Length: 593
Image 1 (cartoon, helix red, strand yellow):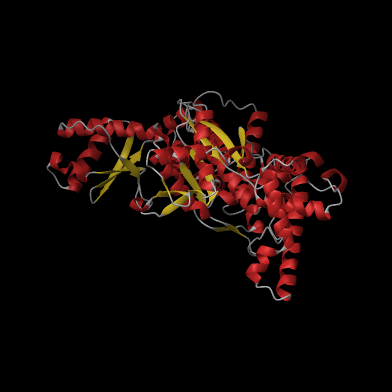
Image 2 (cartoon, rainbow, N blue to C red):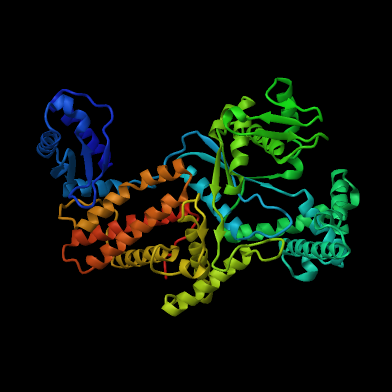
């Protein structure tokens, strides 16, 4: 590509001018206020040149201009050599881009990684926070795959504990045998309904006990419905047939509901782990750690790890009664995954930032246990999603349901699209599919354009706009280019052969070719940072620049037929990169709007 060609030319210049063989030459983008595409910093070569920074830059620039067909001009600003590229080099770069399938993506390199995301509780449906989680995890998996890594997408389903017993008990008390089929309610929402009913009854009983003179804290412990839920959990742990059967039935309702939601989201998994299978896995590893002195046991029999030398505290791993805590479970699950997939070199955990400390401790413990792969484990920590209407509380039933939000986005996309008249010639089925494509694209893009680490405000109305930094703006740009390509095909324009004639490119055309060459850089950066936001910003910038090209330059009214052909082919490359870039975000781009 262009950048590597210029780097090689610079190496030759340094060798010819100063008899110095440089292994790696660093180029950076030229700042907007100066002419040029790439900038070369001369300061580290002054000992060899024995000249000032400005003189060194002039000497190197002059050599490149006279001895290569890549550099058309240059300027030097305080030792920063800004290089301008010839039209011929730009066109050669374009031909290379055009003829390279999937440029920017890497071939499989033999590496394997695991990405965990979603990991819901089975006592309630998926909500807005799960949307950000799923979209982030799924996108990171796509980005890693684009860099040549084989990815295994997994989730651990939190299917045990007091939370599911609360829903089960409330269903026993108030459900009258209600099922998803009899009620017409989606399975996960039906179970969530009884989780809310439990909380309402629990609060009512606390108030009654407090009114009778009991201390509130004591009332919370003594409320009959909570005591019943705790007893149900003990029965589950002992595999009581009646309780275990109900647990399987209600979890089955939830899984059916989750699957429907995941299908609408456009995410999937290669393997599911269940907490009911994994919660005992880490216990033996912890006991082994005690034997070799990594962990220590207190007089009451509880097991701890001392992390004070690492700047942390003492962490409980086994309770005095020998039962596991979440950390113990996660230790075992991590180890089990490496047994299940022995070729993976690390894991990404997509979990909210309230668990930052937990994962810092987990990875440190795994390292102390001697697992070298623990250094390659990464917590994809993300901030909460707020709405203009305020925070969400699942126990009170005020959570923004994922299904409802996605349907609202589809409905909003319908209203906006019909208002703008962008469905002319569509059948009802095609229009319905377009609304889903736009609505889901708006939602995914808006949730992923923000750096994962940042807390964010999701504004549904803003996200669906066709102007600004939104998914529909980029989707509409792709549809616009698709229209251009259909017209070129109808006129039987040849877009198979390379551009051979030389003509002057406009600044915006050169800028876009440069941006296209940066696609591979951005794909690698997104993988390194585990941040789909890098890709989101890139595709927005590319779409914005293409729309400037479309406004400034003519395509089909261009008199130079080779230049017209170039602009059609140029548009095709932009459309391809927009499609693949948005694909990394899990967003589909339409061909018609």
